[in-house]
Picture 1 (cartoon, rainbow, N blue to C red):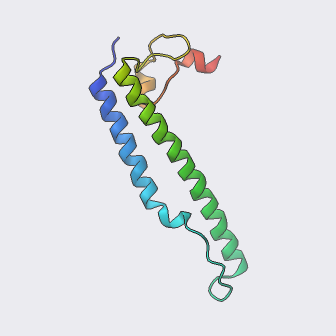
Picture 2: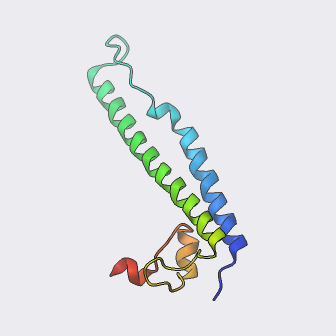
Picture 3: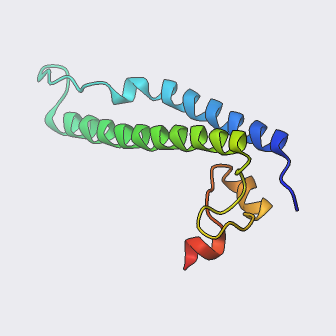
Length: 111
């Protein structure tokens, strides 16, 4: 089985676009929480701070995904995309459909 690199590029670009859009949409949630006692009660402020922390954690995840996407594009350029970095075997096509940034086969990641 050989991997269709055009499909791989399309999947990676779609994932990148989705990740960037989610980042833009969550920008407001990641902003600093105002500590104005008049407009927000203590519990509401705590909820807002918790939501901010969760949004920031999601943003860190998105940053990691974007790095993995860039690495996958580099692997395509080098002719190494779709091959396990540990054993060198091809990564299953279904695995790459689910996660186009996968760098290891199921056997190596499991064991």
